[in-house]
Length: 69
Image (cartoon, rainbow, N blue to C red; front, side, top):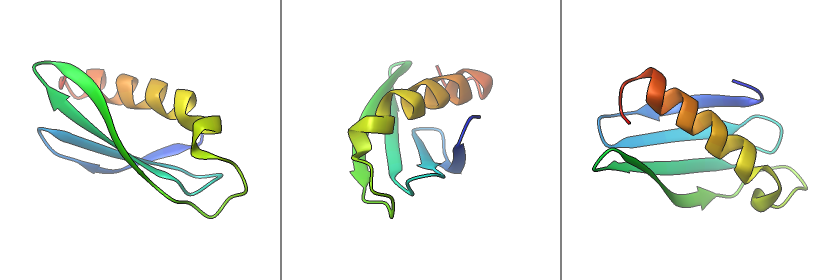
């Protein structure tokens, strides 16, 4: 995954950290869908919205790889 790492994965939750900014994005899995949740503040100067699309794409790939969606 580009600039992201999975820090937690359960049957219903996926949490990823964007390494460049430190923001942590939480996703829920409900009825086979990936739903965005809260975002924890990072250490970088960027707004979480600046990297959200990249993290969402990485979360979707990871959820598919794990058979969650």
